[in-house]
Length: 298
Image (cartoon, rainbow, N blue to C red):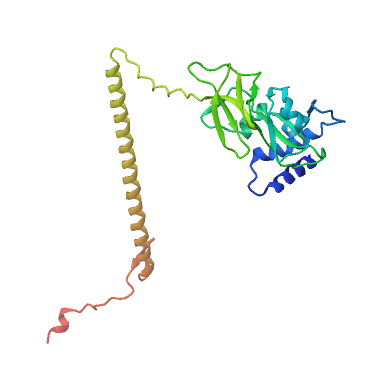
């Protein structure tokens, strides 16, 4: 796993910080496709195995002489038929055609908003074959000069009713182009890249909300629920108001009690005296002394 991560990271670093995921995938698949060569013979496809974390993708590699490709083409390479007159730039003596079938990884690396894939995304890319141990190779530019390259898709999902299938082509710069499907499952191209058959996605309109059930006397039942809810709400409001009033009354009562206690603490203490068997408060002194009337008689 560590080796796989290092391979993936080295592929990204070789292309710069804006290396798209699909281009990183091409670099990894080129490396693993080249590993399938064991004493390769010209014109023979060699199926390879992708890394474990890309299980489901199919890859293959075929080494060709440039002159043979131009004069003879390739009658059948997986789903591709390559006519005579295909040239590459820059020119190399030998080249390798790497085949890809992304299968369940198609929408991951080539998401296409508004469309549904009817087939796997297939890739055909050309590389220099002078060193079959090389990695991170740049793609050669190949182009059919006479007749187009044909791609006959073998596994195509049924076309939804009312939909029109289209061929889609992704070039190496990420641009896409739509063309018509030929004979139900065939696409044509003059360039390398990635290809598939798609249809426009049809999203059904949202279902209307269900109408409320209508029964005889249903209106009176609805009114009864409304009236009952209003009564319950009114009672609950009255109970809440009564609790609020009770709380305010108790609060004021406590406030008065505290005030009286503070006043008592701040006043003079009363002197107590015994009257019979009972103790009662008594004034310590008398402010005005009583006087007898006879004292004023001369």
